[in-house]
Image 1: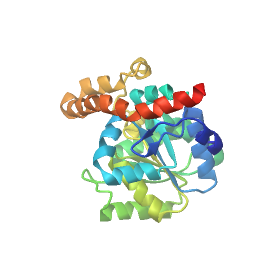
Image 2 (image 1 turned 30 degrees about the vertical axis):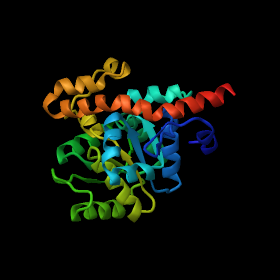
Image 3 (image 1 turned 45 degrees about the vertical axis):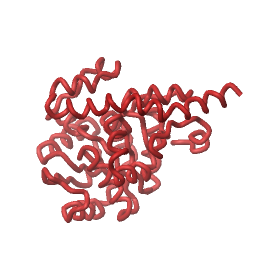
Length: 265
């Protein structure tokens, strides 16, 4: 469980009003499961450089992030900047959270709703997770159309489907910024479901997309592996991310200096 007093006492990196308040995978898992078991409504976002680019450009995305109860560091530059503040932090992606959360949800009889991707991926994901975590409960599934709009009538239907299902956890595999904005809308209309923004996480489990090799993930080059796999789509995105880095460092430098000064004092 996330100790809020500790979260306040450590130096959390803040980007555009968004504070990274969950420093590790174990803390993320325990915090999410405890909140779900208490029947709380919440969202989980995982901050990376592409998200920072979008935070600067989209007010609804900033609002969605600022409403998230739990925020982890996804991108390695975010991890490094957090460590410069003096915070021991680990990279924690949405995809990495899925299976540990499923294991705990199965133990505590917490039902899960899968939303996003396509019907084949949802079916294969449910099959794979059911085999690995015997007795896991899936409350429902929803695969939106390719042009899903978080503000549309289709989104309203999805929200109502989640409500009727009674799910305590909902994995959103819509990609950013759709999944974060949709999660924020759900928080306005649902009372006892936690929403996790997981990107392509379900596709990795279903085998419909291949994730970067583990060594590539560990050395912080998962983004490069993905770009080489799909340069036309991801090349422009990562160019924007690289251009952002110097500006992000300058923006966070006062936080780093302040945190270091307090530590010395």
